Length: 189
Image 1 (cartoon, rainbow, N blue to C red):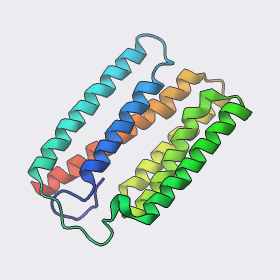
Image 2 (spheres, rainbow, N blue to C red):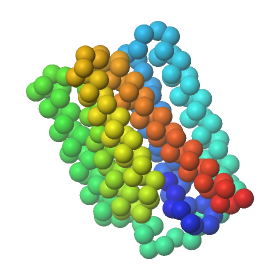
Image 3 (cartoon, rainbow, N blue to C red):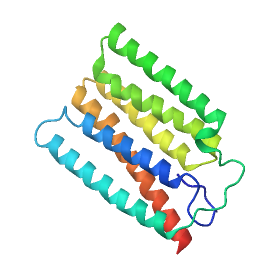
């Protein structure tokens, strides 16, 4: 969501943060339902509150900071390499989900697969957009996905997998936005 060392609002901060907040919210809302009461409600309310706070922070930063000068790497969503990463992600995501759900009949680990694939895709985006923070996000999300598979293999249920791989990834996306906003705020202060 930001490129270190630039002045002003980094290229892609607003759109990247909106995408991360949206998907973080979805990860939390969808994957907290398998937990015993009252945890789904608690996690969903907490997720919505955090998302709202991040949106307020994002819009404050967007108003305060002028966009930084864009380098040649700021092609963003128009970059062909971005679309290659997204195409590979889609093939891996939907192909893997088809195998998990239809061949292996293990829908409890579907979110773990989603976390691994989305995590790995952040390594590609980190390279394409020269955003080192995405390496960390990719590593965390991939690890959370693998932890979900391990939890299931050790006898955990779908709720536990959803908490680790789903809610955990939502929190990781939220944390990434918070760090990007913090870095941008300190840069423009």
